[in-house]
Amino acid sequence: MARVRRPSPQTSAVLAALAEAGPEWSHGYDLCRALDLKAGTVYPILIRLTERGQVETTWETDPPRGRPARHLYRLSTAGAELARSLAAQAADRAPAPGATRLAPRTT
Image 1 (spheres, rainbow, N blue to C red):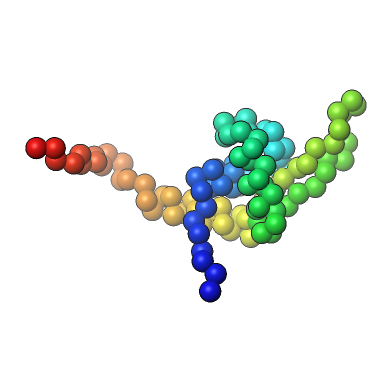
Image 2 (image 1 turned 60 degrees about the horizontal axis):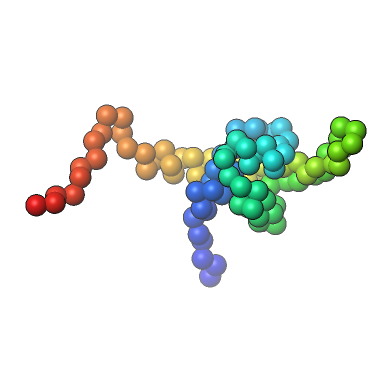
C-alpha cells in the first residue's frame, strides 16, 4: 500500500499560487518571486507535480526577441482538486478568530 504524504509547506504554497492564477499559465520565475522561494526549491516541486499529473506544462509560443522560450505551468484538474483539498484542510486547522493560544506553564 502506497504511503500518502502531506505536501510540504513549499509545495502547498506553489499549488496555492497556481490555483490563484486559475487557468492562466505561470512562469516558474514569477512563482519564485511571488512566493519568495529560490529556484532550487520551486523548479523541483514543479517537476514533481508535473510527473504526478497535477501540473500541466508547455513552452512559451511567442517569446520576446532576444530571449529563449520559457516553460509555462498551470494546474491540471487533479492539481486543482489537490489545491482545494489542502486549502480546506488549512482552514480547518486555523484557529478561530479571537482565539488565544495558551502558553505552557513554566513554574
